[in-house]
Image (tube, rainbow, N blue to C red; front, side, top):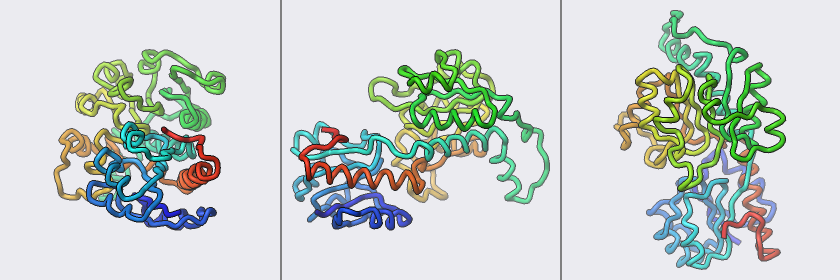
Length: 331
């Protein structure tokens, strides 16, 4: 059984081999699946994807014609896969990873919030240029005197809540379907109350197409507390970046941390040094560093999260081959 896996970074290769207890034949491709490299699937039974791989109709047809029977994605989200086409073409399996280390995403979100709130991002930017002056805008409010609002109180949101509670912050939560654990741990409130009272707002909610696209818009930001921070490590489609840019330019937002961007495949995982980005709003936002910090969708880039993603993907295939069904199937 041969698996071709796209988007495998060099630091990840050893994990793929060490976790391969099923003795699958592996071909590891550093690049994401694109319109130009689908032909590499020749001879493979399985293709394994990651986020931002282009599993659209044209590529799925190519892959199917090359003999691929099974599709795995080592991600929770699957909006990069055209599932209707997968079903139409008769792929036998298309499965995802329902969850992986929630602390990986939470750690990045919390570190972004702390770096912006305590002004360490701004301070270290200047000291890297040997400017050791103490500017007034370095003055910070301690986290234990702050209110943190978490939108989406699932496994990841709960990790962030516990971290901020440990630091002494007041934590508010908003979730359409909160768990009992969330209700016992966090003060659950309506969205308007959360936005009005929170010094820091974290997005840990899923993106649901046709439901919460551009959930964060002008109206959302206008309801936020003045000089607050916004952190998104969930999905780029949740945010209207033009509204965020207005918030930064007007001073309504003190800072923004983004690990995900709408249309991010245009520039993430590429060296754009010295180039103008294709999205001029992202170009402008990038210029507001250190008030705006952007990481290239690396919330899951940890040892534990990677282990979870690979192990579960391998197990998905093994379960289907042995039982003819898979708990994590998408079709």
